[in-house]
Image (cartoon, rainbow, N blue to C red; front, side):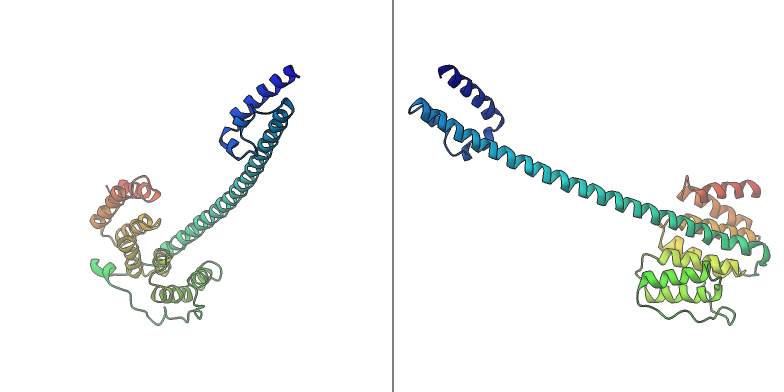
Length: 262
């Protein structure tokens, strides 16, 4: 019995070392183990051991619950990251399609004769530009997507111009404003109305300098100046693109243009 008792005490000492923070909640304090008969002491040790076992079981359950929560959060983070990647990829595709509009119109449309200050003047709608925009849904995201659809999918460029102009007026605080102005620049450039295009590009550069399209918008202003034969102004714009937006595609394109201007 004495040997078994010493073995029990040794096991208890090891257990207490692991579960010391929770020993106070045991049904019998360890300090009382030394009193009473051997049977009473063994009974007390059993109660303490059982109490510690219950605490360890609770801790293991809490740990398992916490792990499930972590796994759930990790899954949500991965799902959100996937959705964000999809949005970014879609935005890249839209930007590429936006840029293709100006490429389509550059060769066919003649450059209009205008003074250098035209880029700072808001364009006035002509009969050729006036088209009924779709009725507003009251939701900025929906109206913006509808305007994009008119330009990209339906190829209804005049209606798209009206839709983007209406969007800018109705949602002056929208995060889509830089894109909407850039779209108008692309659409007007595609129509050969380069002064009007320069105005909207300039709005992006001036009002939204941190927009992902600001560098491209400034570069397009330089292209328009170059198209109009204003080489010195074009060079100044290209140099500004390189200075303000280094390591961007717009800066690389500006360098190529500068090399041709001499």
